[in-house]
Amino acid sequence: MSRDVLATDRLRLRELDERRDSAFVLELLTDPSFLRHIGDRGVRDLDSARDYIRNGPRASYAQHGFGLWMVQARASGEALGLCGLLQRDSLPAPDIGYAFLPRHWSRGYAREACAAVRDHALGALKLPRLLAIVAPDNAASIRVLEHLGLRFERTFVNEAGEALHLYALDAAAAPRG
Ligand SMILES: CC(C)(COP(=O)(O)OP(=O)(O)OC[C@H]1O[C@@H](n2cnc3c(N)ncnc32)[C@H](O)[C@@H]1OP(=O)(O)O)[C@@H](O)C(=O)NCCC(=O)NCCS
View: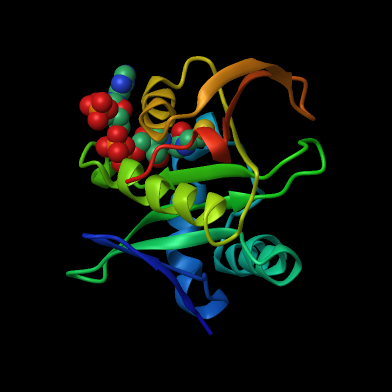
Protein backbone atom coordinates (compact mmCIF):
# COMPACT_ATOMS: atom_id res chain seq x y z
CA MET A 1 0.00 0.00 0.00
CA SER A 2 1.37 3.47 -0.83
CA ARG A 3 -0.88 6.24 0.42
CA ASP A 4 -0.63 9.70 -1.15
CA VAL A 5 0.60 12.30 1.34
CA LEU A 6 1.21 15.60 -0.47
CA ALA A 7 1.08 17.16 -3.92
CA THR A 8 2.78 20.26 -5.35
CA ASP A 9 2.71 21.79 -8.84
CA ARG A 10 5.17 19.25 -10.22
CA LEU A 11 5.50 16.61 -7.53
CA ARG A 12 3.62 13.86 -5.76
CA LEU A 13 4.75 12.64 -2.34
CA ARG A 14 3.51 9.22 -1.30
CA GLU A 15 4.33 6.49 1.15
CA LEU A 16 7.07 4.06 0.18
CA ASP A 17 6.07 0.51 -0.70
CA GLU A 18 8.40 -2.43 -0.07
CA ARG A 19 7.78 -4.24 -3.35
CA ARG A 20 7.25 -1.31 -5.69
CA ASP A 21 10.07 0.98 -4.52
CA SER A 22 12.94 -1.35 -3.57
CA ALA A 23 14.86 -0.85 -6.87
CA PHE A 24 14.66 2.93 -6.54
CA VAL A 25 15.73 2.84 -2.89
CA LEU A 26 18.65 0.57 -3.82
CA GLU A 27 19.79 3.04 -6.49
CA LEU A 28 19.42 6.15 -4.28
CA LEU A 29 20.90 4.76 -1.05
CA THR A 30 23.96 3.35 -2.84
CA ASP A 31 24.60 6.56 -4.79
CA PRO A 32 27.94 8.14 -3.79
CA SER A 33 26.17 11.45 -2.98
CA PHE A 34 23.85 9.72 -0.51
CA LEU A 35 26.70 7.76 1.10
CA ARG A 36 28.81 10.90 1.42
CA HIS A 37 26.23 13.39 2.66
CA ILE A 38 23.80 11.17 4.58
CA GLY A 39 25.47 7.84 5.35
CA ASP A 40 25.46 4.10 4.84
CA ARG A 41 22.07 2.61 5.68
CA GLY A 42 23.27 -0.95 4.96
CA VAL A 43 21.35 -1.23 1.67
CA ARG A 44 23.26 -3.48 -0.76
CA ASP A 45 20.64 -5.34 -2.80
CA LEU A 46 16.86 -5.55 -3.32
CA ASP A 47 16.37 -7.60 -0.15
CA SER A 48 18.16 -5.07 2.06
CA ALA A 49 16.32 -2.22 0.28
CA ARG A 50 13.02 -3.90 1.21
CA ASP A 51 14.24 -4.32 4.81
CA TYR A 52 15.15 -0.63 4.91
CA ILE A 53 11.70 0.44 3.65
CA ARG A 54 9.98 -1.83 6.18
CA ASN A 55 12.11 -1.02 9.24
CA GLY A 56 12.78 2.65 8.39
CA PRO A 57 10.11 4.72 6.63
CA ARG A 58 7.19 2.30 7.05
CA ALA A 59 7.90 1.71 10.75
CA SER A 60 8.02 5.50 11.16
CA TYR A 61 4.63 6.01 9.40
CA ALA A 62 3.11 3.54 11.88
CA GLN A 63 4.81 4.99 14.95
CA HIS A 64 4.79 8.73 14.23
CA GLY A 65 2.40 9.34 11.32
CA PHE A 66 5.30 10.59 9.20
CA GLY A 67 8.58 9.40 7.72
CA LEU A 68 10.55 9.69 4.51
CA TRP A 69 8.22 9.70 1.51
CA MET A 70 8.75 8.93 -2.16
CA VAL A 71 8.89 12.00 -4.43
CA GLN A 72 7.64 11.39 -7.97
CA ALA A 73 7.13 13.64 -10.98
CA ARG A 74 3.38 14.14 -11.32
CA ALA A 75 3.54 14.31 -15.11
CA SER A 76 5.56 11.16 -15.81
CA GLY A 77 5.37 9.23 -12.54
CA GLU A 78 9.17 9.01 -12.55
CA ALA A 79 10.77 8.45 -9.12
CA LEU A 80 13.02 11.41 -8.27
CA GLY A 81 13.99 11.19 -4.61
CA LEU A 82 12.95 10.92 -0.99
CA CYS A 83 11.76 13.72 1.26
CA GLY A 84 10.06 13.72 4.61
CA LEU A 85 10.38 13.84 8.38
CA LEU A 86 12.49 11.81 10.77
CA GLN A 87 12.19 11.38 14.53
CA ARG A 88 15.60 10.60 15.99
CA ASP A 89 16.33 9.67 19.60
CA SER A 90 19.25 12.10 19.49
CA LEU A 91 17.18 15.20 18.63
CA PRO A 92 14.40 16.94 20.59
CA ALA A 93 12.13 17.51 17.55
CA PRO A 94 11.60 15.94 14.09
CA ASP A 95 14.02 16.88 11.33
CA ILE A 96 13.48 17.22 7.60
CA GLY A 97 15.37 14.78 5.37
CA TYR A 98 15.79 14.72 1.59
CA ALA A 99 17.86 13.13 -1.17
CA PHE A 100 17.39 13.10 -4.93
CA LEU A 101 19.11 11.14 -7.70
CA PRO A 102 21.89 13.29 -9.22
CA ARG A 103 20.28 13.22 -12.68
CA HIS A 104 17.36 15.21 -11.21
CA TRP A 105 19.37 17.84 -9.32
CA SER A 106 19.21 21.61 -9.86
CA ARG A 107 15.63 21.74 -11.10
CA GLY A 108 14.23 23.00 -7.82
CA TYR A 109 12.71 19.63 -6.87
CA ALA A 110 14.29 19.59 -3.39
CA ARG A 111 13.07 23.11 -2.67
CA GLU A 112 9.56 22.30 -3.90
CA ALA A 113 9.24 18.99 -2.03
CA CYS A 114 10.79 20.34 1.17
CA ALA A 115 8.51 23.40 1.22
CA ALA A 116 5.47 21.10 1.06
CA VAL A 117 6.89 18.91 3.86
CA ARG A 118 7.66 21.99 5.99
CA ASP A 119 4.10 23.29 5.59
CA HIS A 120 2.66 19.83 6.35
CA ALA A 121 4.88 19.49 9.46
CA LEU A 122 4.00 22.89 10.91
CA GLY A 123 0.41 22.94 9.61
CA ALA A 124 -1.44 19.60 9.51
CA LEU A 125 0.92 17.83 11.94
CA LYS A 126 1.09 20.91 14.21
CA LEU A 127 4.77 20.42 15.07
CA PRO A 128 5.96 23.45 17.03
CA ARG A 129 9.48 23.17 15.65
CA LEU A 130 11.24 21.71 12.63
CA LEU A 131 14.94 20.79 12.67
CA ALA A 132 17.50 19.78 10.05
CA ILE A 133 21.01 18.41 10.31
CA VAL A 134 23.53 18.98 7.58
CA ALA A 135 27.25 18.55 7.01
CA PRO A 136 28.90 22.00 6.96
CA ASP A 137 30.33 21.36 3.46
CA ASN A 138 26.99 20.37 1.88
CA ALA A 139 26.40 23.70 0.16
CA ALA A 140 23.42 22.63 -1.97
CA SER A 141 21.58 21.27 1.06
CA ILE A 142 22.31 24.39 3.13
CA ARG A 143 20.91 26.47 0.25
CA VAL A 144 17.71 24.41 0.36
CA LEU A 145 17.42 24.93 4.14
CA GLU A 146 17.91 28.68 3.81
CA HIS A 147 15.16 28.85 1.18
CA LEU A 148 12.89 26.99 3.61
CA GLY A 149 13.51 29.59 6.29
CA LEU A 150 15.51 27.35 8.62
CA ARG A 151 18.34 29.08 10.44
CA PHE A 152 21.67 27.78 11.75
CA GLU A 153 21.38 27.11 15.45
CA ARG A 154 24.43 25.21 16.65
CA THR A 155 26.96 22.51 15.91
CA PHE A 156 25.67 19.04 16.70
CA VAL A 157 27.77 15.88 17.14
CA ASN A 158 25.98 12.79 15.80
CA GLU A 159 26.17 9.14 16.95
CA ALA A 160 29.21 8.62 14.69
CA GLY A 161 31.05 11.55 16.27
CA GLU A 162 30.72 13.79 13.18
CA ALA A 163 30.30 17.53 13.74
CA LEU A 164 27.13 18.54 11.86
CA HIS A 165 25.19 21.78 11.73
CA LEU A 166 21.76 21.92 13.33
CA TYR A 167 19.19 24.20 11.64
CA ALA A 168 15.79 25.07 13.11
CA LEU A 169 12.50 26.79 12.33
CA ASP A 170 9.79 27.61 14.86
CA ALA A 171 6.20 27.32 13.65
CA ALA A 172 5.49 30.90 14.69
CA ALA A 173 8.30 32.18 12.44
CA ALA A 174 7.59 29.97 9.42
CA PRO A 175 7.29 31.37 5.90
CA ARG A 176 4.71 29.76 3.60
CA GLY A 177 4.86 28.64 -0.03
C1 LIG B 1 20.83 18.52 -1.53
C2 LIG B 1 19.95 18.05 -2.69
C3 LIG B 1 18.73 17.35 -2.12
C4 LIG B 1 19.51 19.26 -3.52
O1 LIG B 1 18.58 18.78 -4.49
P1 LIG B 1 18.15 19.68 -5.77
O2 LIG B 1 16.86 19.14 -6.29
O3 LIG B 1 19.30 19.78 -6.69
O4 LIG B 1 17.91 21.08 -5.05
P2 LIG B 1 17.21 22.37 -5.68
O5 LIG B 1 17.38 22.35 -7.17
O6 LIG B 1 15.83 22.49 -5.15
O7 LIG B 1 18.06 23.56 -5.02
C5 LIG B 1 19.45 23.42 -4.84
C6 LIG B 1 20.01 24.77 -4.46
O8 LIG B 1 21.40 24.58 -4.16
C7 LIG B 1 22.17 25.30 -5.08
N1 LIG B 1 23.34 24.48 -5.35
C8 LIG B 1 23.41 23.34 -6.06
N2 LIG B 1 24.67 22.86 -6.04
C9 LIG B 1 25.38 23.73 -5.28
C10 LIG B 1 26.73 23.79 -4.87
N3 LIG B 1 27.61 22.85 -5.22
N4 LIG B 1 27.12 24.84 -4.11
C11 LIG B 1 26.24 25.79 -3.71
N5 LIG B 1 24.93 25.78 -4.06
C12 LIG B 1 24.52 24.76 -4.84
C13 LIG B 1 21.28 25.50 -6.29
O9 LIG B 1 21.72 26.61 -7.06
C14 LIG B 1 19.96 25.76 -5.60
O10 LIG B 1 19.90 27.04 -5.01
P3 LIG B 1 19.12 28.26 -5.74
O11 LIG B 1 17.71 27.76 -5.95
O12 LIG B 1 19.20 29.38 -4.77
O13 LIG B 1 19.84 28.49 -7.03
C15 LIG B 1 20.74 17.08 -3.62
O14 LIG B 1 21.94 17.68 -3.98
C16 LIG B 1 21.02 15.73 -2.99
O15 LIG B 1 20.20 14.82 -3.07
N6 LIG B 1 22.21 15.54 -2.38
C17 LIG B 1 22.59 14.28 -1.77
C18 LIG B 1 21.79 14.02 -0.50
C19 LIG B 1 21.88 15.16 0.49
O16 LIG B 1 22.90 15.81 0.61
N7 LIG B 1 20.77 15.39 1.21
C20 LIG B 1 20.71 16.41 2.25
C21 LIG B 1 21.32 15.91 3.51
S1 LIG B 1 21.31 17.16 4.79
